[in-house]
Length: 314
Ligand code: ADP
Image (cartoon, rainbow, N blue to C red; front, side, top):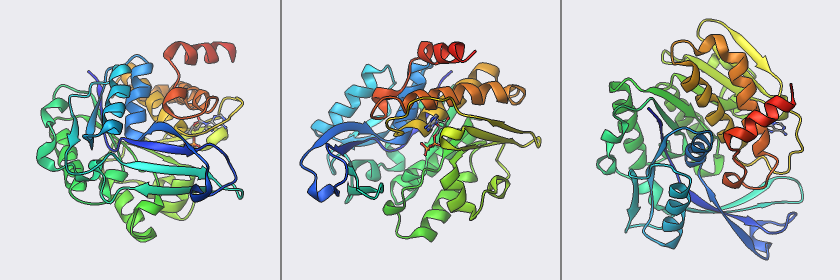
């Protein structure tokens, strides 16, 4: 039984220097990106079977990304190569004011052109969890493909996990982003938001305001402060983060999701609630370790490394 992640897979070109906008950067380092793909790799490193569904371009970047996932042991039978559009690219730099400057190449990119009929939904049969994000809910046809996969996952009784990552620049405006990100909540039993996303969606630190009929567990990640869990039983758990020397937080949220899903897989879909303190502690450790190395995928920790951190913390 494994986790199937659907979403975007792209290249982040990260500026070699900080303090400049993307247009002024002298060079960029290539890094594989895409939140659901990070989750798939993070789960593989924790020792779980994972699969990725999505689309890249039939170009050198697309084949590079496929190779990265394959090398990590992620099942890529559901990854398609488009002849119609290129692999998505995002150029990123950290400006002097600490804000990130982005330029996206998706007009459209291959991930956006994934159609409902392109998905081999039988890859979801016999799997435990379906995980998705909000980027593939932005525009058709991939939005329809995502909704179709969600309906199929529901019909096969998979546990559905959702991380509505906020990328405001990719939506027409803030209201569209709020509405689109909320759409995914209708399908998911497990929802993970960051404190910023919670504020954006509810206008306050009010997790229960996100609650939908499907919701079972809502997690709010709070950076170095750790994470909070709100369960449908009324149970609330708050676990502080692990003290580490953070150098780059890219991918920490995705790593956390993998740690969380690891806990649910380990303790079982019907029994995990009682273990939430332990599960959050573990997921915080996976997130914290990911901040200690630059980049997302290079920083995702293997299971032994997480266990080592937990042992050393006593
Ligand atoms: P996102 O990456 O989605 O913005 P967060 O910044 O909340 O989400 O980080 C996700 C998780 O990663 C946190 O809940 C925490 O467990 C861990 N984490 C993130 N930043 C740090 C940090 N500076 N020190 C320790 N743990 C961290």
